[in-house]
Image (cartoon, rainbow, N blue to C red; front, side, top):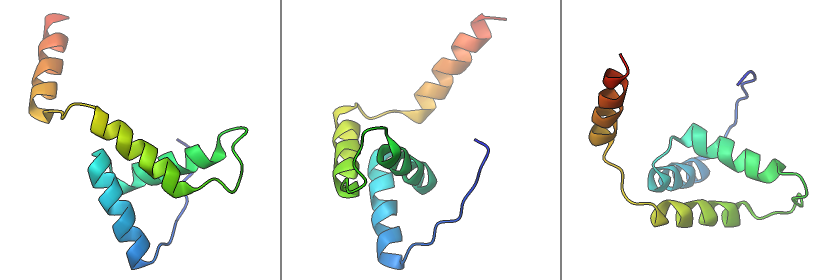
Length: 84
């Protein structure tokens, strides 16, 4: 990533973004970037409802099994250790 921007949100929007990000298990910055990407997809009308994009992301995250971060790191270390 090469460009950074500042995005100002009022408290209510920031809280809504934070809630959705928590549900998706991503940072607020990552969710904001995902929403920008969803809105910039080729062939996507400018009027696209951002809430629909969020709803799809939440639905997808709920379909995924819960991740155990400690187990993921342990497994990754085991795989990397076996490559030495």
